[in-house]
Length: 295
Image (tube, rainbow, N blue to C red; front, side, top):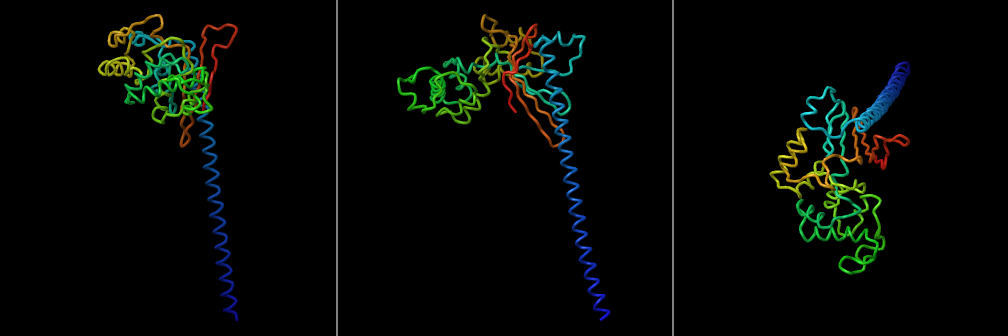
């Protein structure tokens, strides 16, 4: 009988030990999860702080510095710049874990006032078939014109659907709803077009798909090499491309800028985009206007 009681006591001890072990494992796992969540929260907060700091630094420089400088002036500048920027959408480092891009909107094609011939040439230069490129240009024009007749004198609603815009698009995502605009064409359109057109064109800040249309591949390679190294001047660009400044072609970035910032801390990665209009000499109004914000 005594051995039986000892055996039952041993079983009870083992069960209790097992239960306590499970509880200890549960609390340990929960604690680790809580610590990890707290770490993620801290990393996210730090990523937000870094992004906010980078945003303010870039905006301050946009408002107080010349947005483009000749290479020789940069080398001889008495003020050491915190980072080297560009205005053609190539990513640059602002600080540890923070990358940014700036795209001058005057380097893009207008999404509202479409030059069908130029757009077709850009599409063809970027491996879109001629027939398809012509179709895309016509569809974009028909989507926004105020009438209900297509460029081929057909019914727009029958071709483009009952929700045809017949007016200026509010956002480039509108193009994704146009019949005949496939994903690859839509991605290209987002890269080369803007609804915040500055009223003039700056080929020096144009992305490669547009430059490929305007100049030869050899000239494009030279300009890309100089531009990526920060050594491209107005004179060199004009000499290589054969493009000169005119009434509607300027080699200086406009005050309409698309700014994107990516901030990474640990496993947290945050990205935000702003379309901004600058007015550095404003006295009674804000020197900066945030037109759009996208997360």
